[in-house]
Length: 299
Length: 299
Image (cartoon, rainbow over all chains, first blue to last red; front, side, top):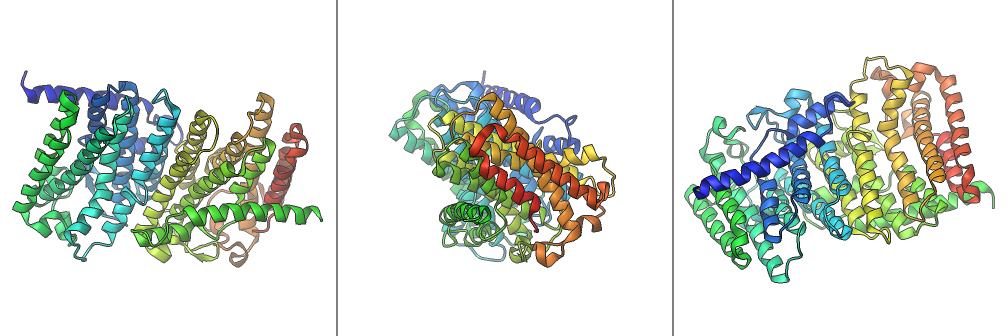
């Protein structure tokens, strides 16, 4: 079996486990309010690359974390991600009509319902994280909830989006752009890695520090590659509107560094991410493969 | 000291404790993203009757709950309430311009930022509930988080709003109207009462059942009175747009029962709420006073 086939099998199996959980635990559309439940499922199921869930499971491999806990953690993080996309696509924000190759949630269900879809997906993430047993020590579970709340809130993802709102037609410096993305995209990617690792045995302080560096570097790499793809690919390939940032005159790694330097930068970040994993020995394999996958993806 | 003065002093002191907590723990506007933090404070501080925090503290009196835990619980519930108002006022929802006598959050800060204010206030509620110690048993704290997530989500407040969306120009029966309000307003009021009581000694099953009946009855009474006030009062007195439901052709207790019957119904609910409290002896006093306050308020 080639390494690629092996990775594909592992990621396929992780995604299947999480999709089954989502299918089973997202409220059924037969339950009132039916349309809201239908729209919540529309926004979450069958979509995306599931990068954050894969990261949580890959980090769980470092510490022999049980699949049951990882599944809940991965699915909850994916709810937060899905809610952020639904709200981000609203007319008041990016006003986007296409997401994952389908009409966006508000195009399909109306703006008011899409607003409620985002709101209730966020609640559901915290409902799952507090309602299933994730760890023998309930304090560890409180810590994970705290971490996801911080990553989602005004000092994390939501704060990054607020900075992004104000960045249109506004030249950001490279450090400012980086600070924005560390919140906007990085915070949730970081939470996925750290929460996955928190499902198992405790990390040593050195391991904690290395994993944290991996998570930060990868969050940034993810965004740099996003900017490169946004500049290079067409809408059909991406499954979402391409060239959007340039059209909105938003600062990106490509607009600030140029395309070729942005690509070099993503490769540098990949090698930094790989280096941070060295202390974990052979258990680092899935995280290493995921970093490679994220940096070399084509959509 | 008259009973009224005594209640006013108690409620003033509870509100002061909670306002101080909010002032101190809502992110400071000097922290980036500054405008988001300013807008979050605008949406939460100096506003409203703080009914849900008062209910949490009053329920805490039944079980000798510590003020520190009650403060965090009350403030977190108030964040959820405040976020729901910000999103409810958006153009895609009620499109309202006045709230608590001030311009609504999106009128003051723009729609996109108001969307993020609601999103990040919700995250902050779960951040507080998981970040402070609320109970000697961390499992009890997980239970409270779970309860608030359920009360906020698609089977609680968010679900009630979805039903409300679809009720315009649609005649609801009285049981359907009641089912909607038990979710839309009732779920969070119920959570405030039950979570306040969960900060102290465990309730007996009988006490649990009585408190639950009190909470449900009061949630309904709150909405019936809201409908009466919406029909009777002017905008200046309410501090929010009056007559809105009639203008939107939305079913209300007044439109279905008539004004005089709706008032009678609110008094019946008050006496049911009072009866449910009997098993709690003299410790029931604040909950009794609050039921009276909620049913007899003029705004």
